Length: 476
Image (tube, rainbow, N blue to C red; front, side, top):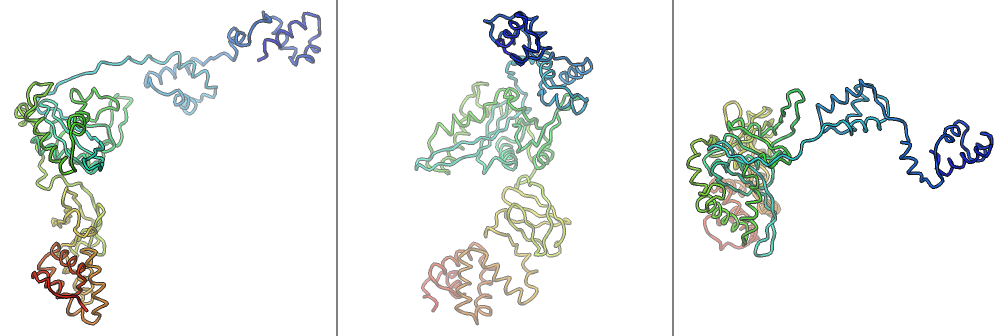
């Protein structure tokens, strides 16, 4: 666009009788453009911006009627659709090859108005109908100056306002399941509908069905199995929709302000002890602001409507599958667990409980501690015999099992092998193994640690420790 000054020069030059080609040579404005300029009313004092505003510079924005109808249809289906996405659909699905400005202008003028903010809805549930479950995190400082970042689960019944809180290792799917289990154990069961946050610990994704207008929710695999076996319903909240949780949505904030930030703790054990006292107070002694009575009073009324969990003393077992390796072991949750030799090569079902891991195959079970005592693998006594079929293999297998008990056992056998290379196989190892089978892992670890600390390496020192004799000297 030519400036006001140049347009004014063209008008003045043509008014003085200069020919169009002469004006072109002096101003650079072509003859055809000159013919338009001389018909304009321009004053020398006019600013360029005023000229732009008056003329509406640029090509007029116009879209075919068919394309406008298509845009209206898309806006009606998705009022909040981004214009960039709408433009992409027009070009890929409807063959639009024009500029974007016309589309942006049309959408700005014709997008349906968004509704204003809705009032927060406060609703009450009938006994046993609703419960809210949440995660929270907070860093606490103990009296000795040390700090710890805590992750906690908090659950509350809507009708009675009965509350349960427990500490967790982390904000995970298993953590949510263990929190729900603890809630059910403390209050007598789960509610019919359990409101949870729309977090990845439970919800993988949610998509809107454009035809029905409803949502399709894909749950995390372990969480889906849990709610199916527990026979309860789950209602994930929409993001940024605190009013969907009803009248107890500030659950995490209540735990932080009323307990974690309101008290002082000497250490983690003191915090856990005070948590139990505080839960008893808020559930049995303190009248709830919303109901006027302690939650325990109304909990008695709704307890018969709750759904107890029927998972047994081990609790719910996260379901996994694994193939048994050639060493007759299964690797799961970071550890290895032994199996019968006949399971080698088979796919087994693994149930990961709070404290134990149970392997299932063909109607049989192998039950292990979830965290092995040696921090690496769990080998059940009934599975050891298969390792001792060959004499040489039995010798080394027994030594390896003992060395894996603790670092001190490894040191013990390292010294023993080098100090007694001719006799440790026939004399020391059989005696150490006999002591292991009689005393068990825990006592054997203590024996190895004692001998390593005293520098006494030999089966007789292990036996003397187990018999309470501590006066033997060092091995020469």
